[in-house]
Length: 472
Image (tube, rainbow, N blue to C red):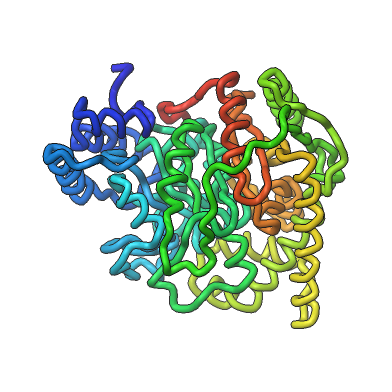
């Protein structure tokens, strides 16, 4: 039926459950049936949690029957990426050696969604150590894009994006250190938000040590969904305070209104995008989105910006050195062949920094952040590609070092934002040659609301392209 519950948005499900139009059990059962129908072709969900989800649904339905106020995600089936702690589940992070690392408590993002009434129906796949833009590993195998089995679903939240695009729950958790929410959303034709650093609390109790400093500052938790409205709903629920994260900031979800019309800077110059030529389909998507924003009342201009190139290069240098010093030995010992190849392709060309150079590079980050903060005072929004290329075919990051360097340049818009600590959203714009197209919208710190408003204006004209049945 065209109106089966698994097709519904999260907002509609929560409203229907809260209003006793449907039960939480019906919502979970519908999405579980969809999972059983499509997941064998996708390998997006690696751990089914139907028993726990149905027990949670019964508790939600009982609370509503008692007259208790439902949470904003009451009865909404969601998935959680397997690299964050969820009580009773392995935090495998796609690594065979971590298969039996079972969490005894929930990470903040899981706890927050559960507190809002969400029901976790499964855990989603990621690459080993969550450090690739493709999702596959020796523990669970390759995840496939619902649009094309020949193309990546993105990474590292590729299981999350494939699940949402195919109708396995309207809302999914992901995290983003260098595009791991935005790129999978782009590849699968859905919406993905990277919040500002400090917006959503994060902590993994199973972690044996704290993460390196720059990795801490650049990694965030974020939602993936089929609609912008559901992203807004998911963000509000996951952003609640958790004292385990000392970086969390109590910032309002809606900031002061900028002067109208809101100015939008458009980035298409290859010099600002990693010196990388943009594919014609990529440029067409940006031009189309710019026109839609202009028609919606935004003042859209192609102007000189601080650019993404320097920020992306510094991201690669800092992250590459932290991986080399603190993670590489474990990746080489415990990682699969593909992750070892991909990681070496990413970091081998990065200069080896001494302590003084590392500290100077962190200081240089402040200069780049300041430049962008000043620019965003004049142009509160920035429109750009998500990637210089359409979704990559499988094998793109393991073929040759030269190809990996091309990939890194293509992904410049994704790498820049984590270095700057700023929010960005990937929103679809259409389909070209059978694959999704989309754009990235960036705003100032804690101005996710501006990103969401602009993305909604694009969505209103582009439409919503999922859920879809998996294709060959």
